[in-house]
Image (cartoon, rainbow, N blue to C red; front, side, top):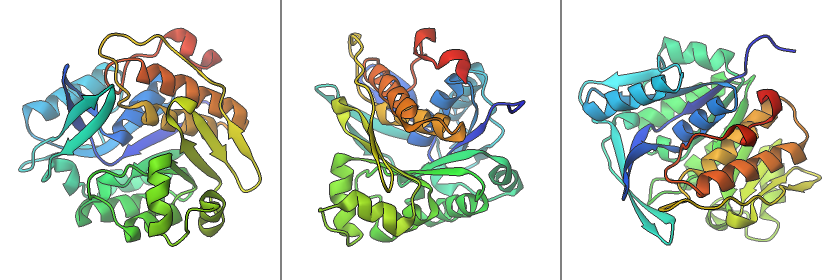
Length: 297
C-alpha cells in the first residue's frame, strides 16, 4: 500500500465561469483536479492565470481547499480566462473569451518535474487551442509516459481540429467524450459512425474509452467489454446546472484508474459524482461525506 495519495494533474485551462448566479471556478482540467482532491488524491492544477484580481481569487479559492497552487503560472500581460455561461433548462451554453493567460502556458522545469512524477494527468482540447499552450501540453503528456493520461474531449466553439484530436487520442491511455462529441469526432478522424468506439480503441491502443450519456450515466468501453455505471439521482437544489458533471466523471475515472479498481466500481462512482454535481450550482460543489469512497481509498 502506498504511503502518499496518488498525484493527479489537471493540465490546461483554469478560468472563471460567469454563471447567472455569479462567477465560479471553471475549466475542465481544474474542475477535475478539484474533484479528485475531494476524493483524497494529491491533485494539482497546472495552468496559467493573469496578475489580476480574478487570478488571485482563483489561487485563494484553491488554497482554501487545501490544494497546492505552485504549478499555476502568472502572466504579466494576459488576463485570467473567463467563460460566459448561459443556461437553457439547466444545460450550459458557453461563450469563451480569447487571449486568456492559459493560452500562454509555458513549458518550464517545474512542469517537467511534475510530468515525470505524476500518477495521472487530465488534459483536453480547449487548453490546446493556441500553439504555445498546445506545445506545452503535448510535451507534458509525452513526458508523463508512466501516468494514466486522460484526454477529455471538450468541443467548444471552433477551438479544435482533426489534427489536434488525432494527437490527443494518440497520446492518451484513456479518452472521454459525450455522445454528441463522438458523432463529431468519428467522421473527423475518418472512422465513420458505425462501430466508432471499437475503432477508436483499436486505432489508438486505448486502455479505456469513456462515453458520458447525460442522465443515462457513464459507459466504460475496453477492447472486450462494456461496463455501465449504476444509475444515481439527487434532488436538485434551486438554480442547479449541469456544469462540471462531466469533469466529476473524469475525477472518478482517474481515481479508479490509479488504484486499479474494477471497472464497475469506477463507473458507479462516476455516475454518483456526475449526478451530484448536476444537482448543484457550479462545477465544484463540496461532496458530502456519504458520496466519497469508503476511507477515500
